Image (cartoon, rainbow, N blue to C red; front, side):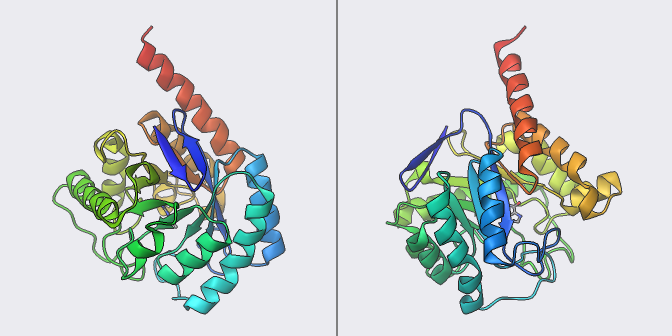
Length: 280
Ligand code: 9MG
């Protein structure tokens, strides 16, 4: 399995880690830490050294209740960081945004993957990516970040998320984005109750066509807090456990804040997966 991001082909025969770099004042677990561009670039370089295969730069928090950010503000936050990081690391830089203007500027600055929690549904988003060579991550979300946790409801969460993601893959292909540039994501915590999140993680293998990589983000999320009873700052072990289990169940990319620990965890999961596939 492969994901082509610009001129880089990521070989996903082994699962890899996407490092989270929030250049926001208000993200749920690291808000404010990397709001200064120099600190953000230094953290991005460190994540690449720790083994991240992708660095995901985001300028607007998607946590429930987060304040909306203008295009100008989001550009001011992410573009200098993406430009400097693209010059300093060899791994693909991803931009976490739903705004077409930010996608276009980020790609021009050196991003080669667009990570969109709205799966390119904003007007102009498909066109902002098509023809650029950038890859996309299409995430499922029920509702909108401000209200999505009010009353999430599904009849069959795995079937519904699978149907949504398949529809967005076809919309991308119809717009001219090649299949080898698309990955999908069930959107853990985005309009889902804990039981929905667990059903999606248990059903990872049924979420997409086997040729399409599945990305999973559980790092420090409330699902980990609900299960372990711990605040965001103490969710490393729970997050790493979920990362390993998601990789074991077929996730190709794990989105994580704690890169070094997560890289080790997915290596362990991958070794076990290969042993299980070989039989013993
Ligand atoms: C931006 N963001 C926050 N959580 C995420 C997740 O689980 N997946 C993706 N693709 N993006 C996320």
